[in-house]
Structure formats: C-alpha cells, structure tokens
Image (cartoon, rainbow, N blue to C red):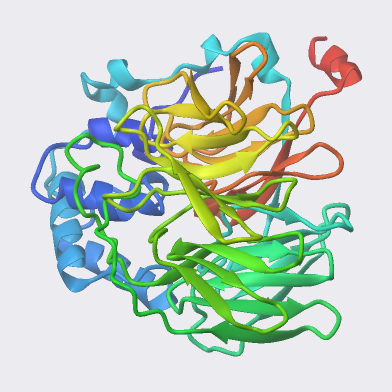
Length: 447
C-alpha cells in the first residue's frame, strides 16, 4: 500500500514544536494554542492574516477559548507568515530536513504493545463539550465534564444524556466527581465554585465562598520547551477550583487556588492558604487527603492533610526541577505522581518517606493523565507525543502503546469495574477506553 504524504495536521505537539519555522510569534503559538490543541486544528495552508484572525474570532464566538486581542494578533501574524499564500513552508513537513530527527515510525512497537483495543464515543459535537476524561460511577455509567454542565454515557448502548447549569455563559467545568450517594460534583473553575448535581431530581446546587488570600506567583503549566517552561505563562494566580475528591465522611476536597474543603453538612468552605496552588489530589484508605503542587513558582512538593486535625505535612522531591502534576494512590498505599516536565512517574512511600523515579521513554513523555489499574500498574497519557503507556512497578518495564490520535488532550484516567481505562480525547470531542486484548483476540489477530 502506498503511503500518502505526511500532513502538518498529523504531527504531534512535540514534532510540530520542533518543525514549525522560526519566526516572530512562534513562542505564542506554542504557549497559547498548544495548551488545547496543535496542528490538527491549525494545519491549513494558504490563509492570509485576515483569514487567521477570522478563524480565531470563530473560536472566541463559539466559546472554546477566551483569546486576548494581542494573542490573536501575534498568532495570526505568525501563521500567515509560515502558512500564508506566499509562505515558503512546504505543504508536507516530511520535506523538511529536521523531519528525520523527529519522525516516529511505529514499526518499533513491540508485539505486546499492539495488544491494546481502543473504543471511543463521539459526544455532542458542540465546540465547548471537550472532556479531558471519563469517570465511572457505581452503576457503570461514565460521567464527563461539558461546557457549563455534564454528561452521562451508557457504555453498553452509547446513549448520552447532557445537563447544563442555568448559566447561559456555559462556564468552564474543569472536572466532575460522581459520589456514592448518587450526586455528581462539578468544579466551576473561574468562578471558584462547586456545584452538586442530583441525579434523581436532575437539579443543580451551586456553592461558592469568596477567598481573598494572596495570589501565588505562577509558572508556565504546559509548554515543556526549555525557553518557555520557566516563564509565567498565562496563569494569573486568581482563586479557582480544579479537581474534586470525597473523603470518608463525604466532604468534598478540591485542588486549585488554594486547597479547599467543603463541608456537606454546614455547606461551608475551609481554605488552606499554606497550600496556595495544587493540581493532583487523592484520598488514601485512612481518609487523609494527598495533593501535588504544580503551577506555583515557589511550591513543588507533594503533601498530606490529616483530615482529623487538618495538619499539613509536605515532602519535596529530591530533584529541584520536579513538577508533580496528577497524583494517584495504589492499593498498597503508595503515592504516585506524574512529573510532567521531568518525564517520570514518581513513587512516594509514606512509610519510608522516600521517592523513586521511573524514567519514561520517548523524546518528550510529558505524562499528564495518569491512572492505577487493579494490578497496581500505572497508566499514563503523554500530552506531547501520541502514545499512552503502562508502567509495571514490580519490574520497571514500560510499554508504549500507539494511539489513533495525533494529539490526545487526555487530562486524567480512571479504571472501571471491568478493568477498562477511561480517557478523554479533548481535541476530538470524544471519550473512550482502552483494554488489553484477550487471549482469544490475540490468536485471531495473529492469523
């Protein structure tokens, strides 16, 4: 079978970042545009500056991005320079001499890396409905954050139901949390609020409480390029809600700025200013809350809150360059986090209070979404390359699996009762799962 020419739209974020021509505004594209998508939404040749401005304005109008005018000007100027009618950029990036250094031929994948099944579901198709993951509830339904609301998917039938907050602006929901009592909680990021969705009445309750603590100094949260990662990026330090978990009493803890606890009885928030900005959050078997500090310039530790006393203890990873992002706890009580910029999965043993790093393969692993399966294997999704991977901590072996997506946008990963690992593919408006092939499926595939 004859292969077609490689298109710009097929490149991963890593490849595009290397191959895009140098010109004024490239850093803005890498730092602003690549936060949500890469070339799958950019790779169109021939537009002039006004055409690119119209495309950016369309994104603003449909609500998928709040793009500032100066950013729009710089991005349109750059894209018209390198992809405009008079640009000298080749239509196929494979014609660039640097392409040979960054191409990722998938014939290097081992046999066991091909024993993975992907199943995904197309959702509403609305521009703001781009979930970063899917979370199973106790009944096997999958819940997802959507623009200004949430959706429930029945994986067996593909049936989808969507509910929206009574807010016409459709505020950005960072994540959702199904709980055992039949509620689903939503973090309304910029409003620094929580919402509870009652699945029986199909009604929302919104809870917010002002926080006037000092804003932390922020750093670039996504772009892994050395010249960008130590810059402020687009973070403001304003209060926000991020990811929610429930403790053993049913209280809702959420990461963001700062760490907070919402008491479900009093309906009051407790803020923890000594934990000014966190990302990953999880609850251990004793009900203590663990967190990972990521965005803040001056805070890069992991820590624990003793929920009985609210005492906070922090541990700083040995490498000063480590930036913990997502955080999960396995069945043995080991605390895991993705070192996004360092390209590691790192384990912390609370008993010995020691760290162990597991280096991930690939040129720019950038582990973002991570999940733990029933065998205590760690799954991760790379933000800048097109693979997901699985780490066996017992052996240290990492298997990289090929992906059907050039860019994943997977923000988190969760295992359901059937052992399927759920993920989101944000640029494509999809949610899906991966599972390993059964022995009978392997036999058929090998024929």
